[in-house]
Length: 249
Figure 1 (cartoon, helix red, strand yellow):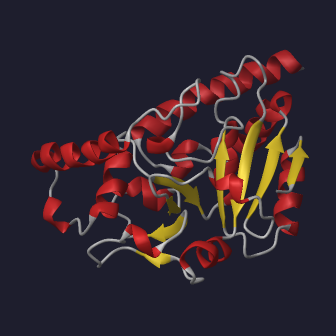
Figure 2 (cartoon, rainbow, N blue to C red; figure 1 turned 90 degrees about the vertical axis):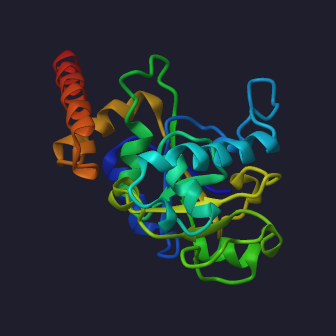
Figure 3 (tube, rainbow, N blue to C red; figure 1 turned 90 degrees about the horizontal axis):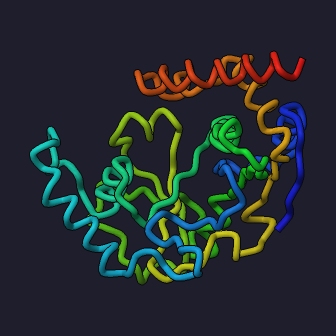
């Protein structure tokens, strides 16, 4: 898999301009950890954090206990839509978030740079969804899971890109799509195919500068998520940026 190292926002934009247009999805990460959804991740010893029965139980328990807090729970059409909803509230699922906005991915990649004491490199992955689905479900289109009872596991051979109804404001705001994994799937980067996945590494020591540049352009969390928690996050982030610039100068 091809990887490129960048140190400036301008280099990131140059990378995007040269990226083939088929790479419509991306995902930013604060570290170079495996591309696995929360339900399939492993601990420091390399063992899965959650057995298969626990993953199933998480979703079942969420269904049972969330009805009284939801306006229209009967409107959720299948288990994948339940995953979309549950993941928003912290339930581990077999879904991994991607976005159609490469600038949003960059913001997510560097957002914790001021808490990163060791200047760990950040990463943005770029995904060609049509090639991934052609590989694992033998069709190029992104699967729309809304309006169907569910996606039987036997119809796909590995992770696939799906889309559904924007059932919460955050999915809509971050222009989100998802990669759906089966219980035994390997990390997405194990495909090791430049026509499907490419990797960009952001030098950890430069992440603060890139985050500062993004904020100077008005790209912030309240810009993506217009809600009070984002406003509060931006207030603290802006202070960190001001302090950093003052110290640097």
